[in-house]
Length: 462
Figure 1 (cartoon, rainbow, N blue to C red):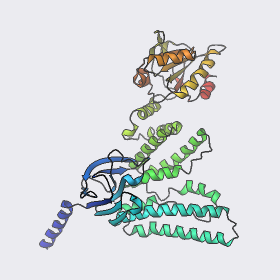
Figure 2 (figure 1 turned 60 degrees about the horizontal axis):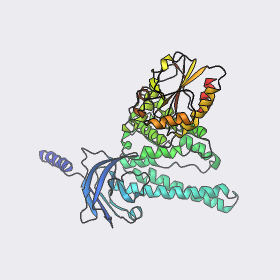
Figure 3 (figure 1 turned 60 degrees about the vertical axis):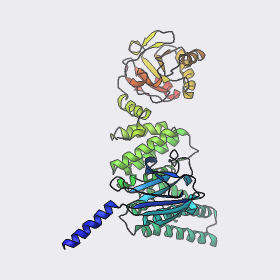
Figure 4 (figure 1 turned 90 degrees about the vertical axis):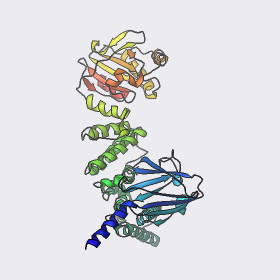
């Protein structure tokens, strides 16, 4: 009995002393050094580097006491580790889950020549990638045929049967082949990452509605370990595509995305870590593509309301956006502003006695500002009775840039600046993160409106 216990202890000690080995062989590779990174959504974090053995083999270990189970990347250029906008020939992703990994490929055609010798998890992962690509391509083509071909034709029936066969094969791989070890990381990943399978009995014109309701049904939002993969970001962007309609004007498209965001967050809230992970990704994405109203919607209805703690991506201007939404709500009193105009005369917000004051933060390099300011100027000049004042604060850092726009546009309203750009006191006090930004206040300097366009400002000023 004692000998058995010692043997078991020795076995576990051996497992700890000798962690799994990762070996990736890349033929025709010019680089003799590669870089190891962990993946979490779109975030790629460099953790180590490794030199090639004999110019084409990279061999290393990932200590399980330091590195979590999940997706990792071996990239061949330290500065090109992100997947955004680059071909996947510059890296190889693999699943790290305590199994030895052995992958071979050719640098001239990484994906097509890639072979997984071990582990089983990586075999399943790359089989899933290939299956997904083939399934998506084939089913989309078959759906096009079914949408246009006469239903009473024998070819229509055979096409339906082929589509059903593809769906059955796909579902079998996801639910049977990939689930031989259902508690493994890769089994849970594939279960959640599977593409939605739409029953062929649902008409084509009803399928989008079905997808909006059911596309996230298989995603396990409660499993925070899946953050260490591309799962949640991929499923989020996949789901958003169901709401993307290029024919819609921006305002309606933003409303569609807001509806999509609600559906995603209602699912994600089951796990706070997953919720925060997806929120950070969406904030970064909508900021990148200029959907400001969707970004504000997320900040006000989710980040602030649920007091979410986000990572470094939300620092800087995004953090200001959050603080502005928290501190400068309708009904709040705004901070005083005291700066000089182009003539060097001091202007003080609290000393302006107009019934309404439109506070505008702008900059000479902002194209939307160049459209807004002349319109506001005409509105201001054409008042029959002076009921409102405009206080414009320039975020320029060069005086000539500021004074030129005042002079060239003939701006007649109050115009001030400290020429400190985003670092100025007024910009900081008002948490300015974008231009133009407007606040409409009453005579007591309480916020009565936060217009985002000239049309909204015009309505409020009436």
